[in-house]
Amino acid sequence: MSTPLKLRFFNTLTRRKELFLPVGKTVKLYTCGPTVYNYAHIGNLRTYIFEDVLRRALEFAGYRVRHAMNITDVGHLTSDADEGEDKLQRQAERERKTAWDIAAFYARAFEQDAKALNILPPHIVVRATDAIPEQISLIQKLEKKGLTYRTSDGVYYDTSRFKGYGKLARLNVRGQKAGARVEENREKRNPTDFALWKFSPTGKKRDMEWESPWGRGFPGWHVECSAISMSALKTSTLDIHTGGIDHIPVHHTNEIAQSEAATGKPFARMWMHGAFLVLRDAKMAKSAGNFVTLESLKAEGLDPLDYRFFLFQTHYRQTLTFSFDAVRSARVGLVKLRETIHRLEHYTQHGENATLERSMSKVQGQAHQAIEDDLNIPKLIAALFAFATILNSAMDQERNIPRAAALALFHEYDKLLAVDLFRKKIAIPAEIQELAEQRQNARKKRNFAEADHLRNEIHAHGWLVKDTPEGTKIHRKES
Image 1 (tube, rainbow, N blue to C red):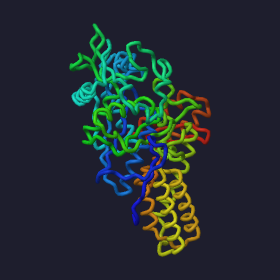
Image 2 (cartoon, rainbow, N blue to C red; image 1 turned 180 degrees about the vertical axis):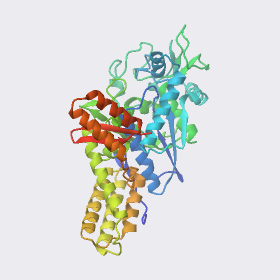
Image 3 (cartoon, rainbow, N blue to C red; image 1 turned 180 degrees about the horizontal axis):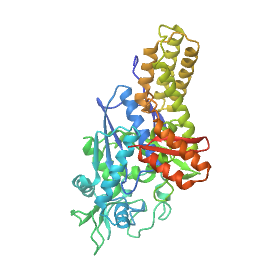
Image 4 (cartoon, rainbow, N blue to C red; image 1 turned 45 degrees about the vertical axis):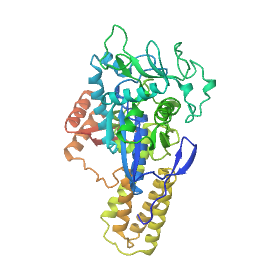
């Protein structure tokens, strides 16, 4: 890049856009990871894609980044009030497996989804079960400062002792009532108090439990992110902490309370949150059972990167409504960009063109402004589409094009978008096309048994066939 970018991000803590300037030479970035008791749904994955773009933008701007993430494999209960069952333990009983098996299986599934979406793996990934000593140590620090108390079911943090409690969410703590945000627990001193350590149920052995100074049990959900982020990134103050907006009122609010009380320092200088992906005006949630997975998209003949590109049509802080048709529409745009690049790669009349060079300079300026303005990726996409239109017009008129520079521009921004703009179109083998035609003829004759047989044969050869309103579509099966 000719000039360094000046990144401005919306800081949830201050509710305004701020110029980002890290304290040290390396940006210390922490992102809340998945709770691995089920497949990640595409609403979850929207948050991880936003975080991936954030990291890529920081690196694009020339910063070194150290990115850490947790894996919640214990302690995330079914209620914000720290009541109910552990989500992994409950799923283990449903599937008749151990909680360890459940965590391992769904953690691998998450990694596969992230890879399919071109999400960069964090530099450091720590499972909550691998950081029990760090979590116990943090609880002990809070205990020494008189911020904890014991109940019949665990050790709790007394939120009334932390002056700034609720500042991230701007909670009216005095107005909080048990049952409004959380379920009632008569042993709690305050409705907003939360568990740091939960005792194992009497007479029942859990798959995941440890000895502690307070008794056998397991850590609460909130304590893991504080302990893991500070130990993994070796700092008391993170440069950026991210997550979904659902984390603001409880999880991130509690992280701030325990971390800042323990260290006496700000926990994170900048807080960034991604908005919901919704289905018919309802938040997508695993607990509600109304969620779509990446496999659901593949079954519809959609590529994971079609979904990634679909997300870029809307700013990460705006609620986005999902539909398969909307993803298909986004795919049309992605295909057009790829076709322009493919055409450009094979265009032979290349040379100097002052008009196009000015257009490239303008597009680059617009793209950089978009990135600087709180990751305004929709504006970046619009600039690339405008440039593609100019290029196609020039090629139609057989004008000279500075091909190498134009291709370099697309390469530069695909590092940020990571949608494989230079992907080559996969040719469908003749034998697969013939099988598809035979299947279509069988369907016309209402010989559905034969059509199903041919579909299975196509599938066995590594391809998927999908009937759509636009006709039969054939796609290579994801490995």
